[in-house]
Length: 259
Ligand SMILES: NC(=O)c1ccc[n+]([C@@H]2O[C@H](COP(=O)([O-])OP(=O)(O)OC[C@H]3O[C@@H](n4cnc5c(N)ncnc54)[C@H](O)[C@@H]3O)[C@@H](O)[C@H]2O)c1
Image (cartoon, rainbow, N blue to C red; front, side, top):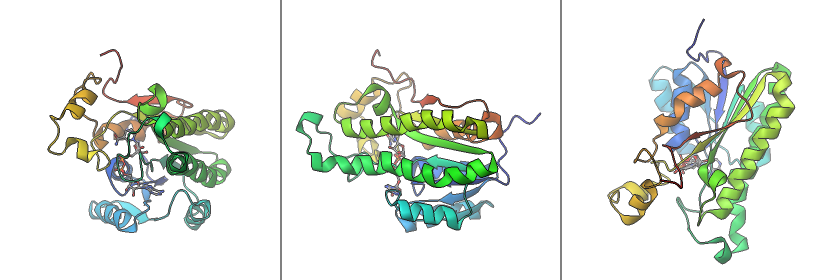
């Protein structure tokens, strides 16, 4: 019996894979034998990751598009003949990186769309585009990267959390509707990571009051790294994950309010 996820012959689309968690996932799926379609809004980032994968002997193509544009998403998926595994990773916590941490009562309704369009509509678009070929092929995996902001709430990140919670809810319905086709759908809920998105928090400021206050709620007192996420994603994306569906699994260093 083979217990190590083998993804030879599988095609995986990882959105927002030009850096951070998505890049880590793209490299890991390629290492397990999948052909990785590396998406990013910024073509120079996806091309760079494709080069890294190819240099390591893997198979990969760059598919730059904006997940908020359904026509672009559907066109890219059709051009590549569908995908077997979708990793909805593209996300934003603000217009520029970590973003404005204002409370909901002070938020401007004009700013809500930038969270909803990427973190919720982006997931709806990509999932809608890939499902028909998964159903036709009677096999598929949909992984959606959400956030503890969606599970526990996040003071200063209410709209982001609402968008991620919407994406997490979609996953549960997908699992119910598509299980009969051997399609699973799961969420991976992340705690605070060290990626380019949050780098300003950690770079030369790891001892800052803000960084210390964040880590106080983590049993394991460090931010997560992309490689903390990859083995779970490979399991959920493989045949070995066939009976795990509709779940939200935390990769969060034991994040808890109670600490
Ligand atoms: N970093 C954290 O602390 C943290 C915590 C919880 C959840 N998450 C989630 O994990 C995922 C990855 O986060 P990260 O820290 O690696 O992010 P990141 O900002 O470092 O990288 C995200 C990538 O997505 C791309 N992207 C943004 N909008 C896009 C769009 N519309 N279409 C296509 N690509 C787009 C960006 O260009 C970027 O390369 C996101 O969904 C994020 O919400 C992150």
